[in-house]
Image (cartoon, rainbow, N blue to C red; front, side):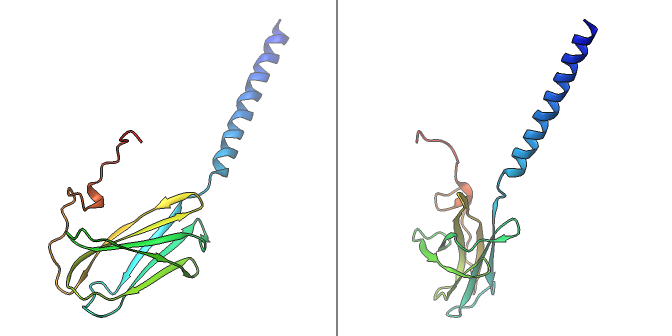
Length: 152
């Protein structure tokens, strides 16, 4: 009887060890998040002078060269948002140069889809004299979005 008890305890311990190692292997196999580093140069910018927008897309140490990247740009409190599809430039960098004919506070969101993941960082930038920024609770602001399931 004692031998049978020792046998069952040994089998139980082995089962626990094997189970734990499988969970670690599964965690090691999870893909890393796609990261997006959005930069604006210069900021603040000047009217009718080019501004460079760059999204550096990486996953771990890999530079992502096959992402779908769309820059969405608008002036604060403006309902008109411009969306521009961006192609890969170099080393995981997606770049757009644009000039602006109106001073004020602007926003950019880089919508990045790569390797079954989506990332969309947002930045504020200024051209000349800043205008009143968006209220984060308005419908125009991404900051005030409610992420609720509305029956979809």
